[in-house]
Image (cartoon, rainbow, N blue to C red; front, side, top):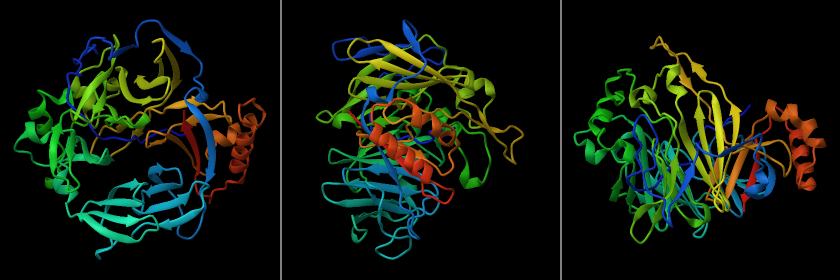
Amino acid sequence: MKYNYCVIFCVCFMFCGCSTNKKQKMSVKETDTVSTIHLSDNVIEVSQLPLSEAVAKVETVPLEMTDESIVASIDKIHVTDSDIWIKHYKDERILRFSRSGKFLNLVGKIGQGPDEYIRLFDFNVDEKQKEVYIISILNGVKVYDFEGNYKRRMNNVRIDDLILAHSGQFVFFDQSVFISQNLCMQKPISNPKDSLWSIALSDSAFHKEKIFKNPAHIGKEELLVEHRSKPESFDIVNYWTENYLTAIDTYNNELTLKYPDTDTVYLYDAKQKDFIPQYSIFTKEEKGDYELTHLWIKDRKAFSYFTITNYYPTKDYIYLIANKGEDIYTYCYNKKDGTVRCQIQESKIVERKLPWFSQPHLYLPRPFILKDDLIGGNFTVDHRSYGKYWIDVLEPNDEEYEMKIEEVKTLSVKDNLWRERFVGAIENMDEDSNPILVIATLK
């Protein structure tokens, strides 16, 4: 089975959404504007959650294979009304495809020239201006047109000097730039309270105008810095890290987020330049000791505690992804009547042996899977784009779909035409094909 390893992240505000280490509690009172999502009482367990409740249509898009457009691994996808943009993991390329999957062009190239970039960190697409922003680790942001031609340099900031943590990303929203950084910290820090920010609001030159903290970090700053990684000394240490990234979404042109280890979903208020509580999540489940659950090399016991890792807003529902042990819980909160359904699926802790530790590195895939009653099979949300699209990436020889292809052919679905295209694309895929994208458009 294929799992969702990626999540989109960035933007937001520090508020009182932090839970205690032992129990998750409501951090804000239920008011006219803040609704409480109850996950411990009156939850209805269901065998499956249908994709059609959140999605208007599903498209199957085989990516064209050419000498320039070989796609072995996808790090990030942007889907717009006219194009599909892919950040390729292995060789740090940006590829542009049409919405039907035809390869159009590459954007920029790696090198040290004025129109080239060194070490791709992230990218963003401005559909209105027809521009692509490539963020390089070493030579700032360079701007290209949709055909891949160099236009100008936006700034010359070294990302290594800007972000002090292990990972981060940039988002261009409402004429501002938001920068995120997620634990672990990996550079010496003299002022933890100012440097241990999770989100920064900045201008186009990446000058920080306002910084925001994950509420779960408040009071732990010194400890978090003390337990950082030590790449500058080549020391292999068992550092503290966040088990998942800040969950960010822009559905319905609203910027919302949920920080790791907190129980509140926040809505960005552009006038106040703050995030305000939108949903408070309540559960009676234990969260476990912070150090135990945040070690990079952790014991299996760390996975036995309840953790909410992601959320997905839609027109009528809020989906929450959580786990306890190797069970993955997909909660579906109904905005209209406050009811909650829960689909429980099994995952499996993955072990990776490391030469410098006697204990293996453990990882638990936490996929977001819905029953695709539109064209058949299951739909795994591997990527989400611009608050409008969910994308399921089907790799060549994906066993899940090979095994289910006959079942997909015979099941009753809501869209037989799109089902036929889906089946045809899967049957024509071979081990040398590019991935197939299944793109779901949210209602």
